[in-house]
Image (cartoon, rainbow, N blue to C red; front, top):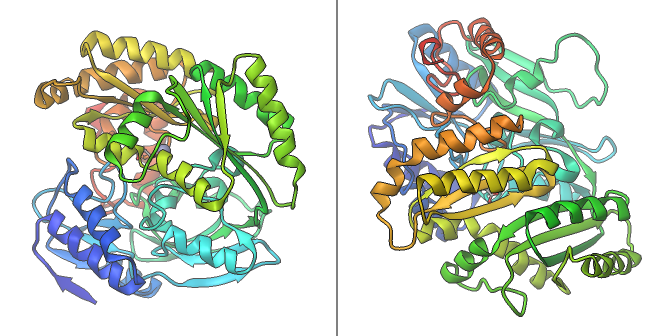
Length: 482
Ligand code: MLT
Ligand code: ZN
């Protein structure tokens, strides 16, 4: 069950990716592309051992051995996170526990609108298993072909449909978790109602493996959307986008499923760097929204309703141009434009990223203030603030000034983070809306959570993992660090 390896983590990741690709029959080209991008990541570490257990009992066995020996465990899903939550430290003193072989769908219950899957199932696999019984699993992310559902839950992933269906936490019904001493907490219920004491499930969601290893989950399913209207809209800016969202939510009876904001800079980068991506509108505009409205009914009237609303919004200056996807291929092309932005920004050169959320109405003010603060630190920095405006989550990224020196630019990252996070705090927002804390954002967490919240988190950690073997050095700052 255990393989003794002594690679640099990037080589180890490569091995894991290839193993997963073979077991899951993935497209190897896609896997290699992802590994290439992973190799550009800023974090690395070492491990002496990678465990690839294929059952909950075997996960429990590995964790029990590590608990007895006091060895740190780094749970590992699809390796798609941004904050280093699954990256071990230097020194090789930890083991990586990959969930890749725990990839079975245990049960699909169409009548209960639920599915029970193991943690190593690919997110796309869960979506397909639901579709096979005419149901819908709505969690959707750019990396859904390679991220695993255990990682989605451990990081409380958000993605493209959170506005309508909620984030991973809201989609979870029950969890099976291997605790830090090797015992199995069987909370694999698929009940909607269960008022029997403390909610243990939610402790492990968003904990990034620091309290235990999620090995399986019961998840909510929904009726499959039968009418989907996807449109790409030019808007004057973020303020107009926010007003338009409220208007469309009201007009459609809350059928807006996705509402993704893209500034011109993001569209230019995507069309410049990604093959086959094109601007669907005739002329350039400052900002855009990719809007998807859907219903489980066959509803030809939905398009008519939307066209009427958008015509009104145009008269009011909230929309400047619009195009609807008229086929699946056109819909895919619009989503490809949106989903290729992170990759395009990487290809554009050095960038400094923030994954923040504020109340939706505060987004325009936040973005203006944050841009001004960044430009005061890096004159010429290029704002690429895009994302899930429908749920208040903006990826407020900054690219190196055109022709600027990357090293000089990246040296300013701490000052830029501090300035942007300060503005987030001012709006009572979050410094990590959907990417988690991992290794990278522990200090930012220490500065943005209150002392009482940190103490409660620390008490939970001590209670569930007294020896500190579960994903050491992740999420929680050390006491001296705050
Ligand atoms: C996205 O929404 O595209 C991602 O969460 C952000 C990213 O990949 O940088
Ligand atoms: Zn995102």
